[in-house]
Length: 401
Image (cartoon, rainbow, N blue to C red; front, side, top):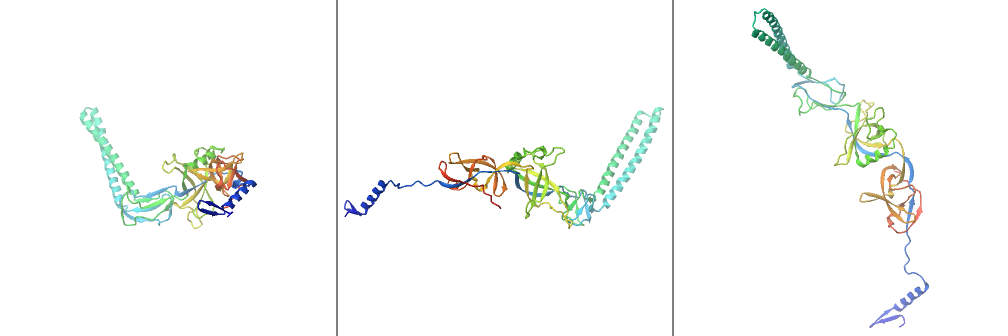
């Protein structure tokens, strides 16, 4: 058997034939194992473009003024003149407490004041006569001192009576509860006929919020704020920077926002307040903007306190930026990086710092890339450090939303 080899007592068919074929391959110079071709990737240069830095945050609309309407004197509520949810002007009467007990106190203290003034008049006359008698020697020094003391007591009694009358008049005035500001009332928590008492933890009669202007509060994270301020360093006017709100004669920095289920950012306001520190627990800082709250055709206001808002904060002037597709950015333990081709054609990992998304699927790269860096945008899943790749150059892709 020529096509078999004997190993011990066993014959293995075909072994001789395989060995012959292997010897033939070696003689022909053909490699048994061919090295795999390098991974195929696509690379693109960053897009150089002038952009505006934009950051988006979640916010909430609040009234610029909120007042809890409380009673300042105790009594029975006899009038509630403004309907719930109605608009009022400062000075309008909202509630009225029964004034009759307070009117009685005013009359009583008025009488007390009249009596005290009469006593003072008598004391003044007695003191005047005592001085004349003392000058002629007909009155002892002790008697003159008594008359002077009676006069001083009468003066004090008049002052006390006047203070009591003023307090009584104030209490009578407080029976009419007035609106301290222009605004809109909420529901009434106490109705006519109830005995009400001054504030100090008691439930308010109602609440009143201003409407002509509103605040928009939002929390900016620390990194976004630093990015924004870094971009604003290029601004020519110091007052346009976030940290410089008090420069006189300069416009305040602006922001844009929209309400739920709205497209774009149709509303604009001015930032008028930034908190003095970053919250160490949340890593955010509170920012507040203010804007007018116009009336609609039905008489209601456009912005209602408590509504949620999406806020966009932008630099006012453009700045040069390098943009790459966000699909080329990888993350490793919170560090962002991309693959770039070095001068020898090998992929190298490059850590970067990114700014904001600018649309079309592009991201602003703040640090880590240059304008001539070839960024691997496709096929980077097969890239390994130090291994050659087959790179083809393309344009940086745009991905419309």
